[in-house]
Each structure stands twice: as C-alpha cells, then as structure tokens.
Length: 217
Ligand code: SF4
Image 1: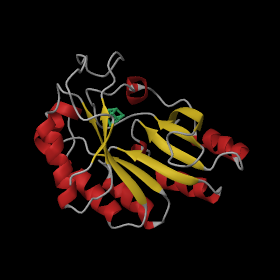
Image 2 (image 1 turned 180 degrees about the vertical axis):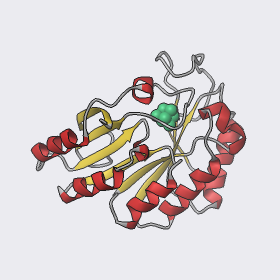
Image 3 (image 1 turned 45 degrees about the horizontal axis):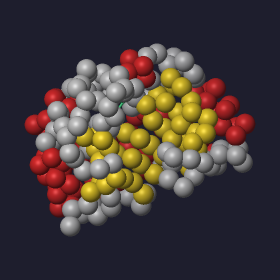
Image 4 (image 1 turned 90 degrees about the horizontal axis):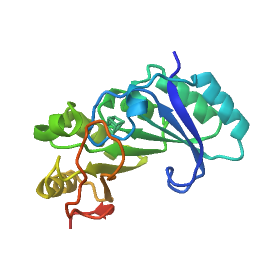
C-alpha cells in the first residue's frame, strides 16, 4: 500500500530555518470543516515509502529537513521505521500532527526521531465534533504534555473560522495553554476564503486575531 499522496520537493516555508521537502500522507482520522486538503484526506496513496526514501537519497546535501504532513502522518503503521531511516540519512524531521495519536508521538520521542513538531489544538471537547467531526481534546493534551516534557522544539496552532468557533473560545484555549506552562507562540491560522473545503463553509469575514499569533500575557 502506498502511504504518500504527494511530495513537495522543496520548501523554505514549512520547516523553520531549513530547506526541506514535504511528504503528504494520505488519509486522516478527523474531518475538519475548514480542511482544504480533501484530495489528501480521501485520496489513495500514490507514492511508496521506498520511492520517498530514494527521493531523499538523491537530495542528500541539498535538503536538510523533511516535513511529515498530510492528512495525518501518524496513521501510517510503519511510521517509526520510516522515520528511523530518514534520520539515518542525516535529515532533520518535523511532524505536522492533529495530536490524536499520542501513542505514536511517544514512540517517536522515545527514540529521539523528531526534531520539531507542529501540534494542532483543534478545539475544546465541547466543540470537537462541530469543528473537526470527532476527536478528543484529552488526546491533544496528552500529546502536548509529551512534547512539553521533551527536549524538542514545537509549536501549537489552531485554525480559526468564525462560523465554527467564537473568539472567546480561542482566548480560552490560549489561556489553557498558558496555565499548562506553554509560553511559546500560539499560532492562529485564519480560514482561507474562496478555496474548496471539506464542508461547504461560508466565507469568514469576522474580525479575528490576525494570521500571526496570540500569546496570553
Ligand atoms: S485539517 Fe483536519 S481533516 Fe484536514 S488533514 Fe488536518 S486534521 Fe485532517
């Protein structure tokens, strides 16, 4: 079974400070209304991990990082083995995850296999169904605590759409992070108007925090 939907061969934007490639894993265990990767969420994998590793072998010395994104990369049953091989090739690894598989995160951290993590904080439990069609806030906090007690650098991020979430909720999420000892930027991504998404959301013209970050002070 092919795991990857696609490969972005070069990016300077997605791995902080490093030239990197992005591996887009097919499939996801959530269904966020604002998701604009429906091809990846519902699509079949088209590229095998062997092809992906061959790609990295040919890019040694040109790229420094690999971003494992999707979809949801932690669903791949052999992710840990795959990342071991990527690290053995000398690459730094960043994981983009929706935080619903702390068991996989734990396995990766245990072997020091990741260098950076972007962790989604989808919503409080009362709004998980509305925002992303399921999932558990408790799994986010479990993933968060694993990262918070690790040595690796990470960021927390949330996508905001005014039809799905109130500003007060976003502020409560920022405060909850603060209480848990998170003092790094909390990135708030605005929903991108005018692109196809999983749910047919209306355009969002609410005045929210800008695309940047908020930090509880
Ligand atoms: S935005 Fe939601 S549905 Fe889309 S890939 Fe991320 S977690 Fe999955």
